[in-house]
Amino acid sequence: MTIAESTEFPPSEAVGREPGTAGTPDACAELLPQTRRALLHRLAVGQAEGRAPSMTGAVVRGGRAVWTGARGSVEGEGEAPHGDVQYRIGSLTKTFVAVLVLRLRDEGLLRLSDPLGRHLADTPVPDATIAQLLSHSAGLAAEPRGPWWERTSGGLRPEPADLFDERPQRHPAGRRHHYSNVGYALLGALVERLRGGVPWGEVLRREVLAPLGMSRTTLRPERPYATGWAVHPWADALLPEPAADTGLMGPAGQLWSTLQDLCRWAAFLLRGDGRVLGAASLAELRTPAVPAESGTWDAGYGLGVQLLRREGRLLVGHHGSMPGFLAALWADVEEDVAAVVLTNCTSGPAAGAVATDLTGIVIAHEPRIPEPWRPLPGPLDPELLALTGPWYWGANPHALRLRAERGLELTPLSGAGRASRFRAEKDGTWTGLDGYYAGETLRVGRDRDGAVSHLDLGTFVFTREPYEPSAPVPGGVDPDGWRV
Image (cartoon, rainbow, N blue to C red; front, side):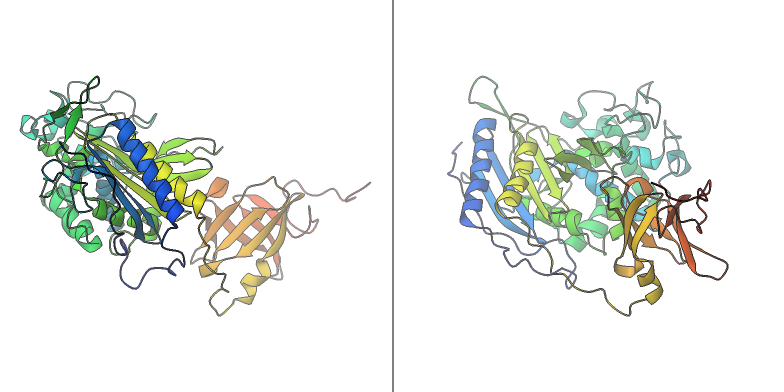
């Protein structure tokens, strides 16, 4: 095999957004030369140290690929791969399946709390909920029964019951995260059942891939594509890997894709696209399935996506592996930057570490330029404006600020307290979106004359003055007031 020199190929066009929906273009969309060199250096080190036949990478920012690069070569081409070469992406497939399931939920065809048996007959785990399957918390076996499924034909397991041995669940449902490829096979079958028997791959093509322009993401390889290799651990020698059609296990890791298509997918995970999934559902996808209230966790799982904390940043994405291939996609939503890495060998390269480092390089070298401040769109509601300003939970000061679409934001002023954003509801209340108050209700309390007297947030009373005597503070306020 000929190993080509490193190369960069031109960044692709804007990706993953419906025309006319993109935000303000980044004034510094093109990366600086030193940033580009640092990115290429990291990719080159990853390919060389990982002994990968080829490795390609890309960075997405502002809804488009701003850097792409490659090292090594693809069998049959003898040169560095370009952005249209297919690689197998393994468990990145799960992120696509999760979007299909959330689309079904948004259409009212299921609830995430539904037991699987309500929609899918003859499953050996009828009581596992759809949310548990998405988040790998149903306690299911990690792998299907029989020989190594990733290297054998799906014809060995023609029916869902054939995926399980006599003990389908290894842990009680809902008690712990236990990664399960079999669970996503069931989710693929669920998609087919609720789409009237249409194969899940065809549902994916017409509902997700076509709207996003991902025409080179397929269930089976279509030329040009990379050959998958195993690299000998003690010699610089290669062994070709099989590329089996895994049948019912396809939703766990069957897809093939290209760097260009995955840049579109990364842009979708960052910015969304209303034709595929609404903003609220996309945010739900990226939220830890069982959040740690302390905020100290460094790895978790949402609904079909992995979550990482790196140097104070939250990354969302997934690793992928199949015989002969490794893949990684990591996105930092706050910084609006993502990276994709693809390689064609079974083990060795740290594809995930390379991808996270690529995002980190861009953020460190070229911090994101924030959107310009703009006033809220009018008209301004004077009653809402009157709610803003300082409020006190007991003696602890907080600030309430007005945000877009009648939303509110509560932040502590003393450094100790609970912050949260709130969504306006039609009944005049607000619902917490994050932090301790996520899902809790914020209500405006009024006195007998109808004047605002306090805020009630999940039974906590906030007043305009510390322990204001005229407000309904639980337990009352000492009649002698403050003293020295």
